[in-house]
Every structure is written in C-alpha cells, then in structure tokens.
Image (cartoon, rainbow, N blue to C red):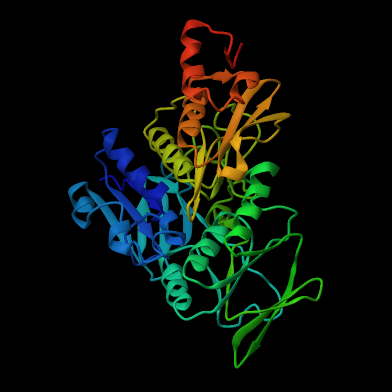
Length: 427
C-alpha cells in the first residue's frame, strides 16, 4: 500500500502543491501538515485588509473545509513536524516524519513548503510586551487588537510589511514613526526613484520617516514597551512597536536531512533539492532566476509560491517540465498601489513614465536596452503591459516608453508587426 506524498508546511505553496498533484492525475494519498491550527489561508491581506478590519480569517481561507476531504487531501492542522528521516533501504525519497505530538507519518515522497519566520531583533528590551511581529494570523489578530488602543506606533523596518502596517495605523489616526536602517525605503525591492516617492508620500500623510537610523534597544515600564532608542541616542516614545525587518527561511528540517542550504533551501529549476528525490517550494527556497535560469534568488511572493509548487508537483510525478515564469509582486500602502513585474537587479538604465508628484507613475528598468522590470504606482495598465512583454520575451524600447501619452500595450502590440519600438529580448 502506498504511503503517498507528505507535504510539510500548510502554506500557499503547500496547498498548491497538493492541488497540483491531484490536477496532474495523482491518486495516491496526500498528507498536508501545518503548524497553525487554521487551514491554509491568504497571508498578504494580514497587513492590509485584515488589519483594517475589512476581512476576517474565514474570508481568507483558500478553500472551503469540505474541499480537502473531497480531494482526498488529509489536512493535519496544529501539528509541527519536528523530525524527518529518509529511508536508507527504501525507494528514493521515502521515509518517516515525526510530529512534536508524537505522531509518525510514513511517506513515499516528500515536499518541504515550510516558509519563513520573521527575523527577530536581539536587542536590550526586545522581549517587552507591545513589541510585535507580523507573519501569521495570530500575529495579525494581536496587532489589530493593540492598534485599537495604541496612540503612538513605531514601525522598525521600511519594507513592504512595515509600510503597509504604518499606512493602516495612520489611517486609524495613530501617530506613526517608521525607522529604517538603510538609506532608502524598500531598498531590496524598488529603485531609488520609487523609494524617494514613497518617503515623500508617507510624509505627506503624516508619517514620520527616519532613514539611516538603527535601533539600539527598547525602554519599558512594568514589562511593557514605552520607547525606542535609536543608535544616535534619539528616544522615540511609543506604546506599540511593529518590527518588520525581513524573514528567515525555515531550513531546520532540510538541514536534518543533510540538504544544501544557503540563505534558504537550495533547489534547481525543477524544485529539486540537493537530494533530487526531495522537492521544496515557496519562501523557504533559493532558486535559479526564474526567467534566465542563472544565479540564485530568493523570492517572497504569492506568484512564486504558486508557480514553484506547480513545478514541484510535476517533478514528484517524474515530469521535468521546463517552465519559465515572470516574477510579480505587490504592496498596497493605503491608496498607493505598487505593482512590480520582473526583477530589476543589474539594471543600467531606467525610464520614468508620468509624474511622481501626481502619485501615478511607473519606472521601467533596462539592461543594455532590454526590459528587465517595472515598478508601477497606481498605473496598473503599465504593469500589465510590462508583465506581458516579459512573458513574451519582448522589450519595449526606452526612447518610446517614457512618453506617458502612448499606452505601453500599443508598443507591445507593435511587436507582432516588427515595429521598431519593440524588439525581441533575445534578438
């Protein structure tokens, strides 16, 4: 009798992998194990709609409860897999997992979709009550309750999560200060033009933004945070702190198996780990560039979780599909909707469409006149056009892209007639 597939991690990647196995015709048992007591749910809204009280957990669930039984997916919630071992004598990829509750789960195939955890600060006072992190539903529920009574909020970290929370807190009328150690906001995700726009936009909305500012510790009274100490000796009074300084891929189980890890579980383009019988997908992985196949990147996005999980499912079934996908991301900070397609790393030129002061513009990034990526702020049509161009392997010539009066989709359409405004990216 087949033990089927064990998927460790009740994440978006984990659920997608299970669904994809069924869609590809796999009829063997599937066990999906997650630490949280909740079935798999959408995480991006936790820092936006959920925090604003516009969504609840039941509305964020990916599937109705009956879906799992109907699909033959054994969903195990509220249990953490603490030990993993591969069988030295059984088929490749087979073995046994043990949960912290003592349950044993034999498997014939193994997938790791364990995600990542928040990077925590090891500073004086970091364990004070009122210092929060945001990764899962329980974190978000706690933060939402605290925001209801807070008056001064300090956000440590000027990335997507930090700025989304800052926007929601400010919309609730709270006094908000964002502290970022780097020289600009969202430095890992966007270019300098977009970073500076967001700094000014948040200032206009009444958020105090401190750049190049490190945190040296936290002050408290009766066990509760009352202030944040910066490295320049500035003291910021507060009654609530949100720390959003990135995540750490969860590699503990992969390391138990002796898999290669380097700032994440290292996988190839087919989602295979250093043991090709074991696959991994989602935020826990580092992988070749999804479009060029070169180098290693770690992508924290819904798109990557879904795309990589589909590839992993096919690989488990022996189908090594050659799939290239365009990475895309988004961050909605109040009424400022940032949409990103492609990866801008290594760009040598950029073009700005529209006026940042109008809060509706986009930046296209190029290397040697070839389109790499776009950051679009409240310009969804630009974003969709570039995402389509990257998917088709075409590039929009920069000398035309800067004219905001010309829709990018018209330049993209011109590629089918070999118009000079658009060239093949592989030409």
